[in-house]
Image 1: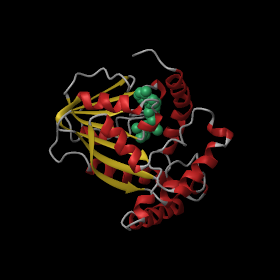
Image 2: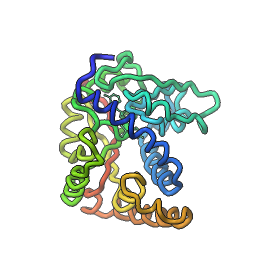
Image 3: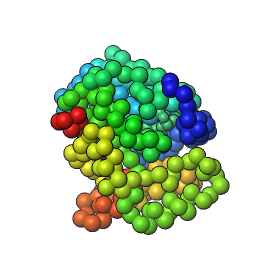
Image 4: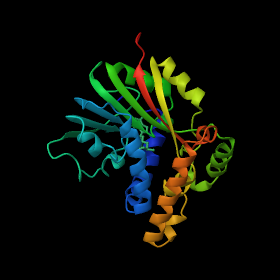
Length: 267
Ligand SMILES: C[S@@+](CC[C@H](N)C(=O)[O-])C[C@H]1O[C@@H](n2cnc3c(N)ncnc32)[C@H](O)[C@@H]1O
């Protein structure tokens, strides 16, 4: 790995602490259902034809790896945090899958140029201190006809910006928490463009369910309800979110966005 900047050291420190939170999250059915719905949408952006090599960058506890193993012959998950990688559970992976996890830094990928069919990056880009450099690395390792699927917090809604500012001020988030980092549509497109990548499609996601189901430790409301009630409340809220994501104007105000990205022909 290249020498670590202060920011990346802080990221490692922070994820040493939050790794346990990720493991706990999987134990709440309402939170797990929510993650599953987001995962299904991300997977719907991956190519129909199964490919050879999928690379999940900032894979954390590997929430996408088993899904990818059913579509790709080889799946690699990379993360800077050993504690996050240690949370990976292979249950549900394709039996013959070649899944490898390794520690690495997204700003300098230890991966050959033009070698990857799919790069997936779920909620990790906003943890970088140099996003364009990371995206340029993604562009380098991607095959010319490869695909990049990205999910990131969105920041087009002034109310959500205010909420992020408020949450950021809580001492529990510490100095390194990145809840305040999120991108407007224009910022995202500009970053991808500067790295030689092109956004082809965008899916907006997350309104009410996002706040109450995404992370039960951060917004501990549903986790205090009986499990069955919490789960049906989550289902209802996800239904509301699906309606919101179809309404013109409202849809662009979501908490989260998912992108289908390709290499620009000239890159
Ligand atoms: C919000 S978590 C997302 C994890 C996972 N993709 C998910 O959706 O559950 C962000 C991840 O990015 C990782 N990360 C932060 N900086 C990194 C870097 N420079 N290189 C690789 N991974 C990094 C963190 O360790 C963490 O696991």
